[in-house]
Amino acid sequence: MVTVDTPAGEVLVAHHKPSWPFGHELERQRQAVAAARVLEQHAAQVGHVIVLGDFDARPDAASMRFWRGLQPVDGLSVCYQDAWETAHPADPGHTFSAVNPLVRAGEVATALSRRIDYILVRSGDHGPTLDVRSCGLVLDRPVGGVWASDHFGVVADLEVPDHPPGAWGTAGERTATARK
Image (cartoon, rainbow, N blue to C red; front, side, top):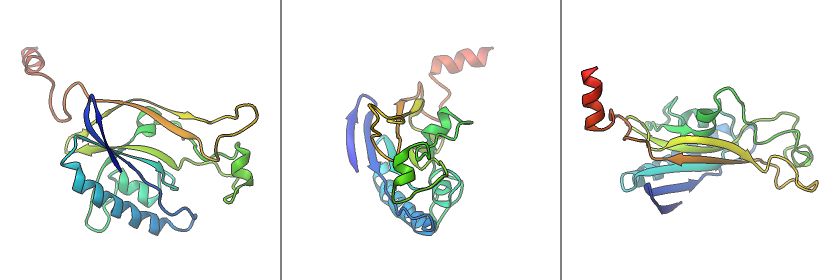
């Protein structure tokens, strides 16, 4: 976890890497709750929170449903916007792909491609504090016949919204809208 000074203000960036075995979703869910509790303690001091990493869970997994605000766990509810889902709602965005020979030959050899790597933006009461302008995969093909990793990377362009979530824009915009 690191706090970065940016033109958008302070951004807390946390890398999350829970248990990886397929059958460990309960552990991943518990680890998500523990991580979220720590992040929530720091969220009030910074303007924005981003959690990213290899979550080892598909978008429909319980741990990811928790992160995305779709189900509370142990009395805690948080809501983080999935950058990939925001930019590509109909694209599965596989980051652990069977087309990659490192996946087929690795410790978790699988013929099933899936998305398990994420960039998540914390939401306040009125939505995400940063807008996702774009999101893409990187290192998703070999260079000179060499794959960089068994995972594809995820990169996102994030920026401060034109106005804070929950606000209707500037006073001038509100007045102009009210006169229409």
